[in-house]
Image 1 (cartoon, rainbow, N blue to C red):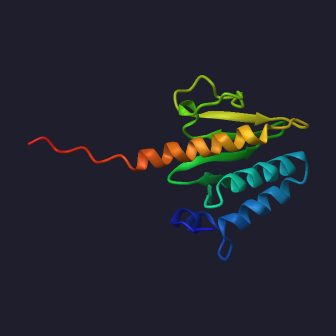
Image 2: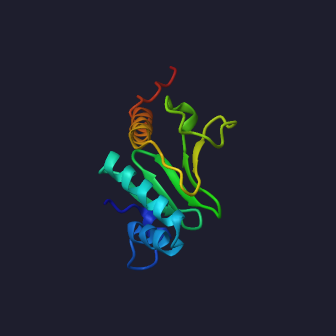
Image 3: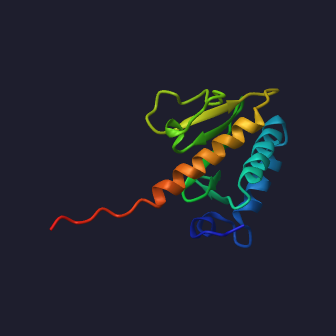
Length: 144
């Protein structure tokens, strides 16, 4: 995995963001850790080049040409928030949270719930494509 400046800033000396994420998942020790770990595996399977980062007080972040999504755990839910989710196609209707915003969308996963793996991977691919297309836009020419 690539190591970014952000990752270095947020890590404990000698620990990569990937190690910090693994430690966070292990520390949860219940269905939330299992769920977050499973979703992490799906993200990495969908994009082997994904960059793992830790931001915002230890929040796992997965990026590729920009943020794809974050992974948060709460008492009753694991939340995966897609930075540009409102712009992504979601035919399987995985997004079930933060639906009123203009930019982000989230998937809340409760204990015992399963996520459609193929649809989730499709969302990851769509997020990467959107990030990549935004990065490749030509610069606007200055008016003369």
